[in-house]
Image (cartoon, rainbow over all chains, first blue to last red; front, side, top):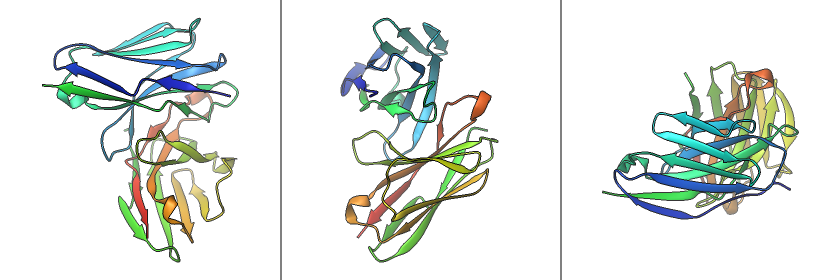
Length: 112
Length: 114
């Protein structure tokens, strides 16, 4: 079955770059997503990447995909205190595109 | 506009009560979802509606009953819940079909069962 793994916690200083990593097991994954969840709130879709891409950049966010190693990363440049949240990596595959498998979530703490 | 709205924001109910959670989107999305999220856990899929028809039911107990009255609305009817059903209930929608599969989430309903 599908499995998505992430580290639980990351702490960075304000202004530094953050890199959150994720690995997945399903080789038929077609879409890979990054979601942000602030305390008590719903999930905010930050960005997503198709499996035929290896990089996507959107303002301060850079997503890198290594399909061979099934490794996905999210880099946040110039990290701000407002970036403190839980970040979920998720994947869906072409066979079950309506089913998204989420990782456990990485809690990002930004130190002022 | 990428907004999914949910009401109520908070709900406290007893185990014998009947209540409903509501979700609405006006993005023209054709797939809508219910998720349950416990503290410090990722969301767990409960139901998927595609083109107003139930396409996925993740073996959810019958005390949870989904309904999709039209393409913009999704309800979750609750009856005879247990304290362990207390959680954040999230609604999501996605374009569906060739429009894409990325899911947009609402803010959630925080449910407490007493």
